[in-house]
Length: 259
Image (cartoon, rainbow, N blue to C red):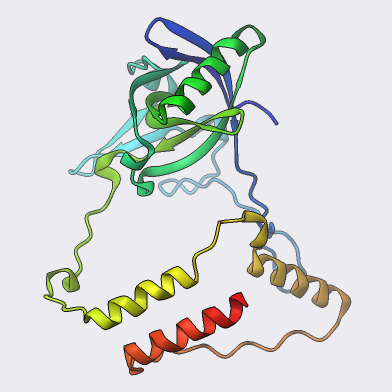
């Protein structure tokens, strides 16, 4: 793995030199856009919408459009003028209980590896978080943008999750939230029973990407000239089934699956 960031965790007067590594390696199949007639790859060129000329990468810069339509051009040196107090620091702001963080805020995950001289301090922080059952709220700058993040333990490692800012979370505005809905006690009892029946420890290895596996099989079949699977019929949700009956049948099905 290649480090995406180098710096130090700062906790009060304690600094722990670390490197950041992406914790996720997605296995999506990669496609190319091609010409259907001869399978030639499609090339994407940078063309200026004003003059119609092809533009070199060195001549491309960023701009921000104002409300009146004017463009404010921004060069790399402009971004360097911005304050970046956490450009090389994971600045610990406070410690919180993991239950305090709504998962909707999480963005990306990274592993933290300590420098050789920082291993003892790294392990000390990890054990302190485990004993206190806390995670850290931190600030970090990645690719010139300061982000909020959490720092917590995972086995023998410290893991950092970058987070969305509060104003990036949409406020749900759904009509049903204003309805006065009455839940029957019997249905709630059955729904709770269904949850209990289907409860089990989460074992990640028991789950597989069924779509990716099916897609890989489809590609193999097309490459070999074999028969292709039939297009599955769409399943329509039956909204007219009695809720109590559906719950009862679901409980029976879940119990049969567990036995």
